[in-house]
Length: 422
Image 1: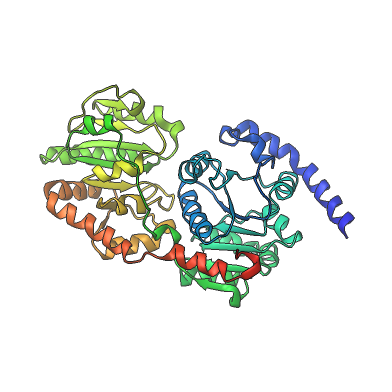
Image 2: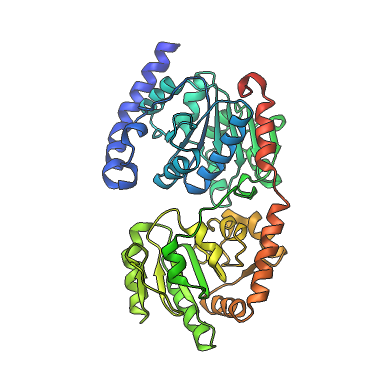
């Protein structure tokens, strides 16, 4: 049986190898940390609990969860898929000799996954949200490593795709040791796809736990903004920057202007965003070329750095969350809400529905359908700073009241005794 399994993995690996090479050529984002992505991962000791997330937001969850588990004596190892996720792990887990070890995750190829498991030899694999990579999961299951999913979610767009592949997905999910779902709806979806009902629990969204600390706004940004009204467009996509520029123009026409901060979701779009903002006739300043400049209402600051947006939300009179006017499904609502910024959302909120519901219910968020309504919302918030601050405070309080998901999830994992417990 072992010989047959090895032969099959070699065959599948050989068939997939050209596709990996093509991906490496056409996707520069896969090139950093290439040795780790190929499974050449250094771990100070084997037998740790391996916790994996995708990008920045999930890496923040991974950091919080492994810190909680480590505090309870459970040795952990953390991985992330994206470069920003890897940077987040490095920043939050530290680089000291006694820091929690972390790396890029191996690409989902039989050879790299096998090498990673040989190096890490985890006693459990914990996946965050929807990191359901088939070879990674198979690599754990064939080695007898229990697999858990925490903050588990299946979005509206992804669920039909998984359901169409249920004949492939169900045999894997049925062998999961546990699924800690964000909501009753997510739990029902995992069960429908094949997870054992007795192994599924609803323990909440780990992203709803307050971040223990935010970095301070950089001193040069504080000087540049100097108390000016600030509107932030975070994690924006094509079309959303134009809507934000139009909204700022509408606000200015009513006597309520502000500095507009544009933070594109993908930094490779920085040049296009700068050109679009410049074409609108506004003064545009690039973050990495700020060089002591002062910003005035009506100016546009293009944030072309990683790791600064979360802190900058603390300066915002209003914040628009990207991916909600573009057909993406929404990005991180929690950073502006935890920083006390009132939030404006478009209609595309499939990925952030529960957080959006909380924010809308308490008045911390305002829903809009287009650039005109976006201008109206910004205008109302800029015209009444006291109301804007009250909305922001309500959002922060509503989230704080829901804290404890990380502790509940860590306790649930520890309850699995020899699988995860110290």
